Length: 361
Image 1: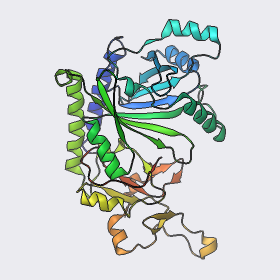
Image 2 (image 1 turned 120 degrees about the vertical axis):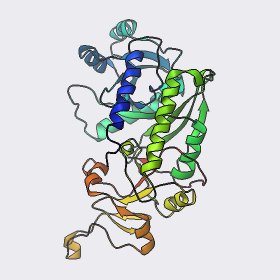
Image 3 (image 1 turned 90 degrees about the vertical axis):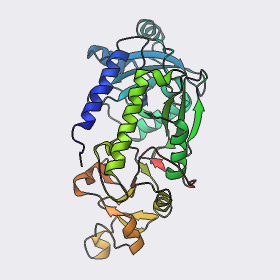
Image 4 (image 1 turned 135 degrees about the horizontal axis):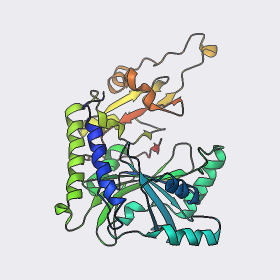
């Protein structure tokens, strides 16, 4: 399950080496800065003070929101255990105007020209992010951890060799409305889609980032990024197939919830496209049909203990299988088993348009 051994650890070290330069040189912006997540919170003061106190390498920048033109503040750092970049975006540093101006002058600078602004921005309006933050923090009765204020996810980004190919693949095989957008200066382009969070009112902007600079082919960072993407695809090609295989890089994926229909269209389209895929039923759920998943019936109503999986028609059994015992727990969210799961690579060719919009777990 964790093959190839040591492969992820090797690449995490390479991510960290690139980030060490970016977070120590003001004009640097490495090729893996788009490998990460962005969060929103109304004020950045508490996070910034904590990062400075903990001596975390970080960047602090201001930028104009590409959706509504509002001035935004962003601080970023990276997790040395994963190599992923963590960004926190906000409309302010402090609710005190004088303190806000003082901290901005001391810590914040304009975003460097080498950064891809499309990938840096959340792609969501400030009004939407603030309303989402208020709804989520109130409805979940969120208790802060370690004294830091609540922050909710606003974007997920990942580097890509081709934004066009990534968008076409996600449209045709994951039924997601991805579109491609170019930066004003022509340095980068993104494939992106705003995906609704499961059982929330807000959206997450998922994007795949391509470097389109004229000298990109000669850039060492870009070459390393291409090496990484090709390497991961080669691992998938070698170790995965339809209803077989598992590799170490499958932890790096998006989880989608198809509430209306999953298998009646998805596996057929993936089969037609000759794409490797593995649909699963998570532990604790049974299926009345491939497009309708429900919890096990209560023993009080059936007179017998619930079965883990109801017997399926032959065609359904061919398409779905139980998750391997060792990884079942990884597909549970907040202790609740998920209804249906479909794992597929995030890049590849595309063939058929979709007709249902899934939600992000």
